[in-house]
Length: 204
Image (tube, rainbow, N blue to C red; front, side, top):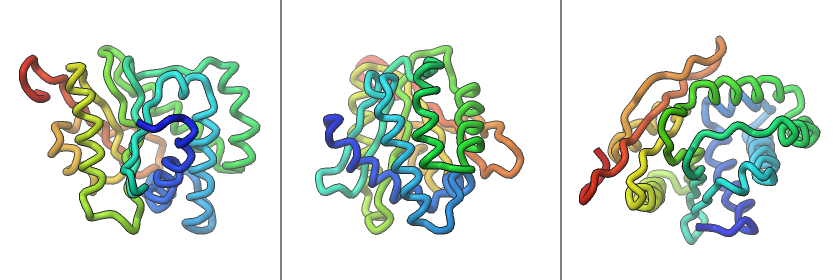
C-alpha cells in the first residue's frame, strides 16, 4: 500500500491507462491522448486532496510502476459533503473546462446506482500502463487487493468501463450485475459484484 506522498505517481499510471478508455474519451474529450491523460491525472490529484478520499482510499502499485489500483474501504459508498464538492469546483474547472458538466453528471448518475445496502470494498480503478499491458500485471495487483478483501470476508464492487476487462474480473470472482443507466451517447459501463469470502474459503 502506498503512502499519500506516492499517490501522484500511481495516478500517472491510471491516467496513462485510461487515456484511451471509451468512457474517459467520452467524458474528458481533449484533442488527443496526452490531453486526456493530463486531465484525468489532474482530476485524480484534485479528488485525492479531499478528506473523503484521504480517509477512505488505499492505493496499491507494482514496484516497477507498471500498474496501480485504487480501492475505497468499506462501507464503499461515499457522498462528499457539499462544502467539499464546492471547494473542488475551481480546480476541476481549470482541469476539465467544458467537459466538467458531463463529468460531474456521470459521477452523480453512477453514485445513485452504487449499491448501498451492504458494506463492501470499492475498486475505483485498476490500471496497467499501455506499454505494459498483456503481461499479467493487472491480474497480479487485483489478486493482491482481493487477498485483503477476503481476509475481512467482505464483498467487493467495481464498474468496468471497457468490455474487454470483464473476463479478467470474472476470473477473479466478480459477476456482472447490470449495465449502468447512463445518458444518451455514453459508452457502456458494467457494474460487477463479488461476494464476500466464506469462512475457511474463497469468495462465493
